[in-house]
Amino acid sequence: MMVDKRHSEQGGRSGPAGPAAAAVPLYSFQPPVGTPFGLEVTTVEDFFAQHDDWPWNPPRPGRATFHYLIAVTEGELLHDVDHVTRTVSPGQWLWVRPGHTQCWHPPGAARGPFVLFEPDVLTPDIARLLAPLTAHEAPAVLNPHPDDADWLRQTALQLLDEHRALGRRRLEAHHALRRSLLESLLLRLANSPDITATETSPGAGRGDTYGRFVDALELRFRELHQAADYAELLGCSVRTLSRAARAATGKGARELIDERRLLEARRLLGVAGWDARAVAAHLGFTDPANFGRFFRGHTGLTPAAFAAGEAANAPRSRGRPGPHLADRAAGASASRR
Image 1: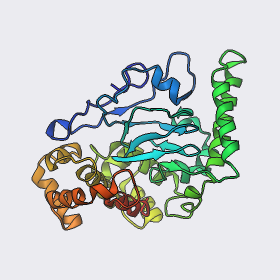
Image 2: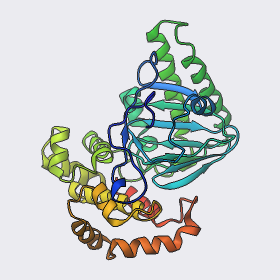
Image 3: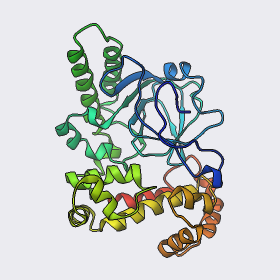
Image 4: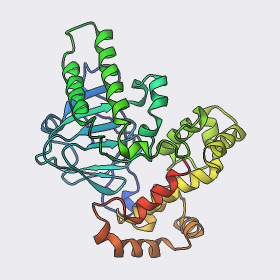
């Protein structure tokens, strides 16, 4: 599991690609006893040293309801995000957001601060300012502005020091300092060139209804497939939800739901190498034939034909997110969020 000691599993365990591998488990935030207020800070080396049962042997994919943020200061970290292996070098930051499918690699010589936090740790005003940074479609690997790099590293180390200082001051003050340091860190990280270019993209200033819809969609797209399902979940009417979606993206809620399922299908059929029957079950299709019609209706290709084309491109794509068709699809979908 990932990991019984730290983060509870809300879904089934995944295995090799195929019908038995239909579920990618979802993990909620469950830090060690004594860690307050949805925020944990450690280091890559300590995290791996403390968890010999972490799922890298064999690697297993999973999703989480919270953020993983790692600053690599030494070595090189490999980490799969949405079925593409990312290489994170010293000076770069890895950000795995809620709902992303991820898979760990052994850390090797990688070192650096590691922050895990729930979305509601951020105050509402700061969360709105950070919307382009925390959005699901934002880059997984960030390259801070050169003027900010040293400041970011020092602030991350201060956050780590304050986290380890539990008991040194009153609990409320301790958490206020941790949250202040985290928000300062993220506000400066939002100045990264990777992020500033997306600030004017559709959805960056999304309204509350649309923002909550996107968050719910990322966590529930496997089992909820109708606009009415999300309207009920969010406590609004289908009309209100569709209006919010169209205001942000120009598309209706149902269209966005279908696009999110299609994006996941492309990722799983492509880099992950799942077969069509497993993808159909993973995405909640009761019949693989229905999935085949859905996929072909949106792409013009059968799942098998799409997978064959992705396999032909795999040697050029592995480890480089940009050129891969799955990420091109992600980029296209980013314009509608």
